[in-house]
Length: 321
Image (cartoon, rainbow, N blue to C red; front, side, top):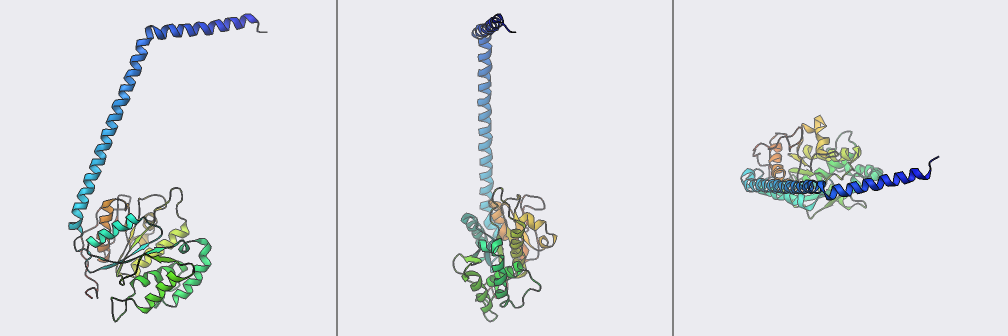
């Protein structure tokens, strides 16, 4: 049994230790501890200044490189797409700044932007699958020729691209009747599959397909990716050339899905990292190379090269009109 003397001894020990600590801290160790803390603070301050300097240098280098690309863009892009008419398809909500940057570079290359189309959620919503099947049957009546044994995704994608590229045989600067009918069905139904950003001015002969940004921790499902890739494939099949434009390579990026498909990646070009000025300049160069039959994938990730070849494709028939 622990008696009162044990508690007395314990308390005395605690107070002795405390007294020794106070004496040492206020005496022999005071200067050593103070110097140590002062040295650590000085070292941290120096490290902070070094990191700030390195950051400022990196930002300046990035801005210098961007300035170089901006200054070089007109020469790199001059006349690459003169006489070509390009439609822009957004596969979902895409930042306005991204679309504006793509437009600027295409126009620097001499292209005419015929219009912008954006897919609505109905295009990929699992709950709207029955509605899409019903609508695809209506659309297929205006597809001549219609794709054989086509899935709903393929029928919808083919209908969309033909609505943007279908020209009247007698007047290539106007849309054909079937193209008008297809676009009307896609845009004016109760649950429209696509929306127009302004009027479509001319039938397009090539297409740029822009993927929406991938939401953090919310990668698109396989069904969504399949439907989007069907649009990319149709854009190439139903036009002179198509390019897929995407954000940074990451889980759920459509460029990754494209490169994982050996057949599709061998026929359709892509550009990733579209937030970078260099990637924006690469878009019209990639499209020009694609029209000329040179398929490539451009960016800084696996399976990509940085710069598309400098190619000037032939002007499409009827462009002079």
